[in-house]
Amino acid sequence: MLKRRRLIFGLLAVVIIVIVVVQYSDQGVLAVTVQVERTSLEVSIREEGRTRVGESYVVTSPTSGLIERVNWKEGDEVGEGSVLFKVLPTPDSGQSSQVSRARHEAATARQRQARTLIDDARAVSEQAELTVKRQRSLAEQDIISAEMLEQAELAASSAVRQLEAAGETLIAANADVLAAKAMLITNDADRDASGSEVVAPVSGRILRVFEQSERVVLAGTPILEMGDTELLELVVDVLSEDAVRIRPGNRVDITGWGGENSLLGRVRLVEPAAFTKISALGVEEQRVNVIIDLEEAPSQLGVGFRVEAGIVVWEADDIVTIPISSVFQEDGRWYTFIVDGGTVSKRAVELGERSADMIHVTEGLVTGEEVVRYPSVDIEDGVVIKR
Image (cartoon, rainbow, N blue to C red):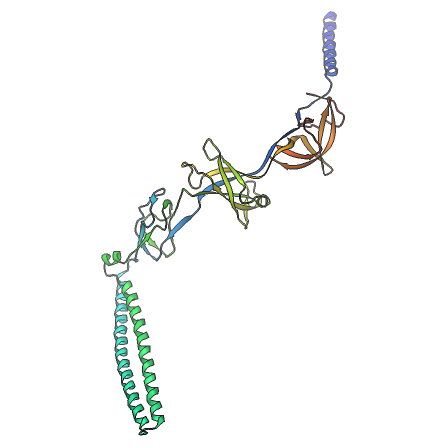
């Protein structure tokens, strides 16, 4: 029993000695290092976007009435001038038809009355002109006074004005007759003949159909939307603080659209007005739309497709770069740990632009030096490291 205890204690002592020897024979803090290099750096703003047609047209009903069933479907090709749908006058009840007929009869009566007034006014005007001619001849012979001639001329001028007024009355009466006649639809054939056909303003595709079935609509009701799908553009909303760095002409790398290759685009417009948007985390953000032209849109890419856009706002070649994880900040200044012969030393650096994982070092480092990539709390000035 005693021998067994001594054996156990002996084994524990050996294990402890081995652990101590291993610890002291392998001194130094474990660290990952990287070499300072001169490389190219590209800074981009990455956001999600969606495709849309550059010029879309929402076709609305020009008048209130009954639209016939729209036979177009989303994706259909439409030529310029093709009939998209037809708007018929709203079907009237029996009482409305009686009112329309009564209005038409009243307007026709006013038209006849206006024509009679014109005939009477024309006769009075012609008689007044003859009277003026006779009075003028008599005045030249001093048979009548100048005052009597002036009265005749005044009567002739008044007759001319009455004739003009009668003409205006006839014009108004004619308009009333046309309006009443347009409202007077006696049967379905008249209704069909008086309908309005709405045609496509341009050639393109049907994007959306808002009203498919036959129903009564008001003037201005959207019926369908169409556009040229070959003229796709990309709209990306970015944070307002990022938008100030974006300029028209900036290159855009487009990925995540479903194809194997990335697409190329150029910024055409940064909209001048921002809008408020609630993020997925519930934070209120000010966003700005950036409009991007696609240099070549594949046939598989449609309207409203989601994509990922990388808007390049800065790029340079042959500059000193290190991983962002190699720098840290103290008292408002940036530092990194330099490795020299297995020992680290803290050095202040000046930084420039940065990408997602790399940063441009403008001062403090030269090519070939070695820095710690992920400095832990155990690494400090003068510490020996092991790789």
